[in-house]
Length: 353
Image 1 (spheres, helix red, strand yellow):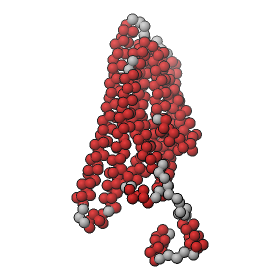
Image 2 (image 1 turned 90 degrees about the vertical axis):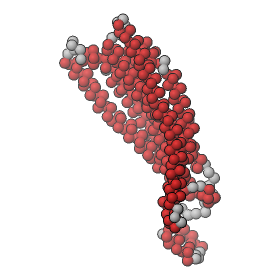
Image 3 (image 1 turned 180 degrees about the vertical axis):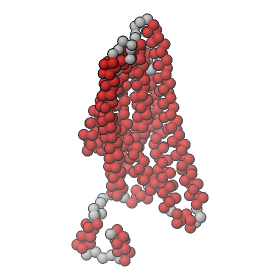
Image 4 (image 1 turned 180 degrees about the horizontal axis):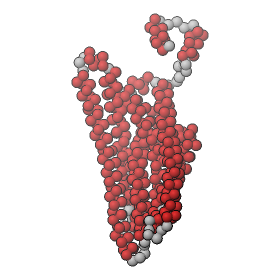
């Protein structure tokens, strides 16, 4: 996690204001959800009871509407700026990789496949930059869960202790699933590269394919590469989709214990019905951040694997630059050195003009 953030930081610095504001809005969104859950008890006990007045119901309705109005800009700018930074960072990383490719020696291209490089620029960069969005999720969702946990404590601390008993199981699920996905994601990215290479050669080499009647061979090679990608991708999918129902199963286990214990608390008068409804609301709202946290944990480990491939390319040794930044610089050198070219060289120069 720390290594990924260190690699992302240079691409986030130009947009630090949007990053900070997105973080601040995550606090606001967590607070709004907490207030909405807190209002459940007064709504049932004061707004909808037989003894409540019209003014009380109107005040609670107006408060809920106000929270909805405030939530609109907070949610919009929070997610819009996150996507802005992610997409801008993706473009910056691709530009850096493309610039790096112009500076690598020809020996690199003799051992590298075109499809692999294209996959590195398109797939790996997109997954890597998504690490910022997932990192924000790892901040926003725990904040929301903490707010709901505090609310649950205020309603009934004994029931909350029952819920906290599942925490070690959840941490174990997150740790194991993240480790397995990160280990397998390198194979997934490699197979994507191989499949992209097969696609690129199959399209660009059509003249040779048709000249030697190799259509079946080219198709078979693409199908094999696609099957290999499917198999390794299913390993990641298996772990990812297994983690989600595990989290929900553990949550259902905790919820069942809460129902049994809450019946005892209500029957003895230690807890009111309004407290219980508010507690259940906070518990339900707390499970959603836990589920999203699980998803963000998976995506973040995929981003870490993609970043390894990207920086393995960016850290390659460059050749000494003997080229020209612009075509006009090339023309000036021709005039200064009074260079002469063959007919073929002149034709190449005309094409680039």
